[in-house]
Length: 194
Image 1 (tube, one colour):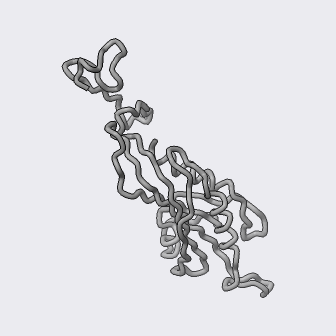
Image 2: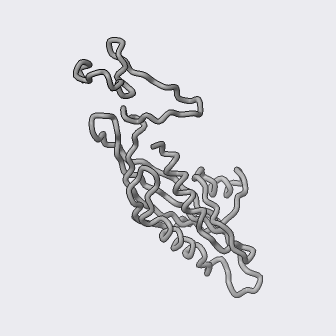
Image 3: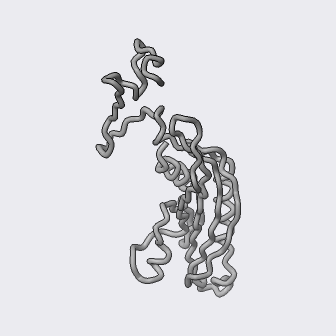
């Protein structure tokens, strides 16, 4: 499975979370792939985006080859950055230093992701978290999850064809006999030395 499917699944899970917005209503959590958005916003670069937001970054650990067919397995760290922008309310009763909204969103994110199984993965498990205090008027909370991932793109048994034009169908032959993808049924694999 392509890693993009894991991103798509996690973003879909997070987009299903309803959160309170700064106008007093509710909306779907803005889920997106992390690309330094808070840092660029802080520097006056990039683009504006809706908050509360959850930015997803997937960090693969070193892979282990499993079996002789090229399939690889590894753990993924799924890092979710929860961002909430909050300014002082005009009522004077709540201010940025007493805002608990980011923690309510944190709770919803953990509840939503725990034990979910993105395509090609085992269950997601919570690992750790930490606040990020390096931004003004913005609460950022980083939450790390882990899951086990089976990557079959390098596998000799992955017959998935790609329709985006980036990959072409590959046929491996030995002595003018097709051996991959799977040899035709009428050929005895013993004759091929496999």
